[in-house]
Image (cartoon, rainbow, N blue to C red):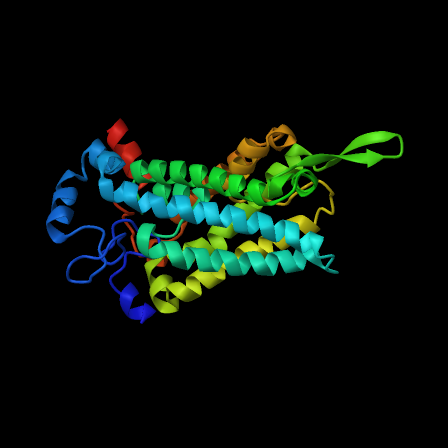
Amino acid sequence: MAGNVMEDEENVYTGSGRRVQPFSTERGEESWINVDEESKKQSNSTTLSGLLGLNELVSLEVWRASLAELIGTALLVFSLDTIVISSFESKASSPNLVMAILIAIIVTILLLATHPVSGGHINPVITFSAALVGIISFSRATIYILAQCVGAMLGALALKAVVNNTIEETFSLGGCTLTVVAPGPNGPIVVGLGMEQALWLEILCSFVFLWASVWMAFDRRQAQDLGKVVVFIIIGLVVGLLVFISTTVTGAKGYAGAGMNPARCLGAALVRGGHLWYGHWVFWVGPSISCVAFYLYTKLIPHNHFHHSDGFKHDFFKIVKYIFK
């Protein structure tokens, strides 16, 4: 069934395909827009407003779809942070491995749940890279990322409401940390990872995340051949694997591992504050660099390895060409 549904999709994460829509039509089909609306958009696609998708800023459908991103990200943050805390509190012999497996499962479930409504991003890394490639417009991406950040804050608030002060302080509310203050032989000491090393880990892990899994969702042929369920399972497994690698390869206490989701890191920082703001920029700059690198990769590979040789409608290069033409 998944294969049949995806035959008419642009790809898993598209915002302009024929069968990915936040709400079903009267005929039961899933399409972002009907044929008449699509024709109007195509006629305006050569304008800067059309390339940026400015009409989506006032589109009720887009804002309603962003609700799925908000709720999905809130559940993601709450789930991931509780998984981090429970994995270490359980005193398991390999808490990092347990944590990675559980994260892979919850990421897959949440992607499948949000995909029919918004495309299943729940992560600014996916949204920003989709906007650069042109799968969605920068206007839609802005709305989605805003919703993801608000959702992350709500998820962190929900976690704060159910854990005691000791756990909140011990695990920094499950947030993204580079360092923590720990007791030392001669008083408190700062332990963790340096900013430069953390930045490189963030860049590398985020790029691998995009290249090894999200690319399958962006590419029509792979999405059709594998089916969306398999694609989302692979994405979940890659996330879990990267979490396991980044938390074990450094061996640095106080370092929470590669964030690969700036919204998740922001949510805990807004609610908990304090040392969570130290080096917080790393969790935004690193993934942003990875998104740009991934986009350049899609432009450099041979056209026959990408089903859209001319790029998607909202491709960033098309916007640049229009501005400087």
